[in-house]
Image (cartoon, rainbow, N blue to C red; front, side, top):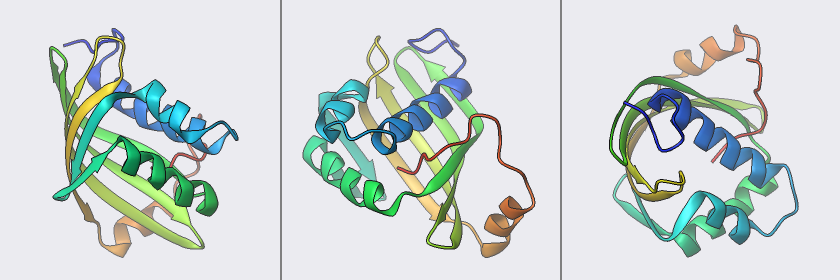
Length: 148
């Protein structure tokens, strides 16, 4: 199944989160403008039961910019049906000398132009060994500072 951009769902999800975070960390542009490029004005994300609307998403960019995490998204599987995408991925994050691996189960809806409209995410931090495994792997081509 193809996503709104005509790419496979795994590539779309990895690209969406990687590009969004790179844009947040890679410029001094107003975070609201960046959020609006990637999300609809009525965006609602439910992450582990916490409701995140546009204003909360914009507010979340401030600590991300301050902490400057380095991360990458490893998509294990993803399926698309129309505007809906379900994915399971691991977010690998390095920040302040710590390494984390966060498993994410994602269910989202996107507009035809690729902006996120709705998302439900369940996450769990993986045991330290999963994050430690990351140290033994070199950075992947295209790795940069995604971390949202």
